[in-house]
Length: 189
Image (cartoon, rainbow, N blue to C red; front, side):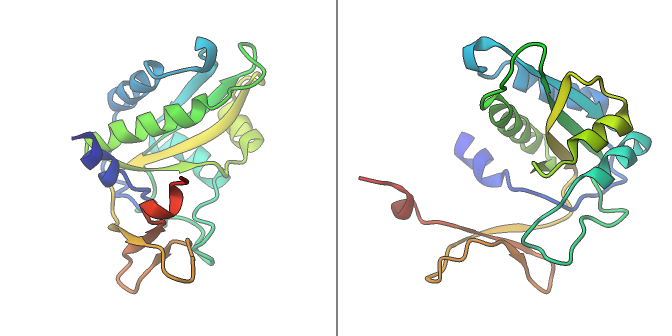
């Protein structure tokens, strides 16, 4: 069921780095995004696929991980993503990608979850630096990085407490806790 897939699709930031994600799998995930909605059907997005340790190493230093986990600089060697999909805006097609990259990212993540993968949508990307590292043409603007791999962490959803704190956190066992607002608190009547 779709609702089960949505509940299972959690942000994952630690992976089994040595479990590969193939180019074919990445292409299948991008194909799902390709078929998704696009504002005015402009389709201004392009995708950079990375599945080798060498290319992944060029991307990793240009990402910022988990702002609420102070003191954590991201996954350690051995827990890093096995693959990335960079979502790019082709500025020769449009001046503004609208919300297309959000639609594409969520579609890819749902497809990844269906395949037993986990991932993290990263908006804190040093776009100019990663573009230089990969030799991307100037008309591509990096919008998001999708980190992908076999998940190495457990994520638990819980209700936001009475203090209203929405910051995610990890317990002593490394379980990642994500507070979510109650349904009645987000519906305006």
